[in-house]
Image 1: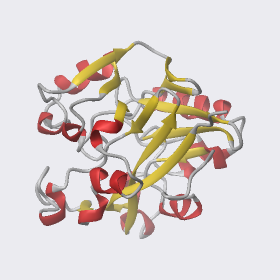
Image 2: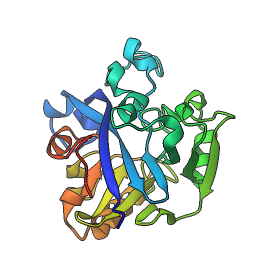
Image 3: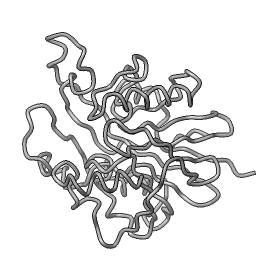
Length: 253
């Protein structure tokens, strides 16, 4: 019998000020910089390969400030092997082998390499597509608004493949979504995207967001989806959580 398989890839990192994720910290902690991972996931399914987020564009290897210029509170850190195409190649997967790409949202560290997958269908919430198109400065179209790409707007909870579902988790951005994967051996996991930057966000039910109330509700939804087993919620930029996970070529089944 076929079993779903989930593989996690580091697709770069950001040096970012701690208050960006944990605004409740006191000084001097809140102003410290920490290196946090950027990651993508491959879900092998009977219906094809599903990719969750495409990471940072390789332009950032040579020019960390390529997207937004130099920022005092955040710096991109990326090597050649962090590019999603290189990461997939390390497990024998080519871009044309990816059937579906799910973007949690269209920020440059989650959709930066969308252009590498012209044959895939991109699943993004309909209201997020509209939100991102209206805010080009925050969501640079050069990475995702590409004529060759096919976007399938989702309206709410949507099955992507057997055992794989997108679930709206707005707050960080309108129409943000997370992915629920029901694995045969591991059980249910939630790939949070920026609904939860870190495990602490889920634990305390609070995260900095454009819409704090929606974000709070999304964190409560994530908790309920994993039945309060927070090890099953995979936050987007948490170095200590990342260190504990299996990384490709190791996998979850």
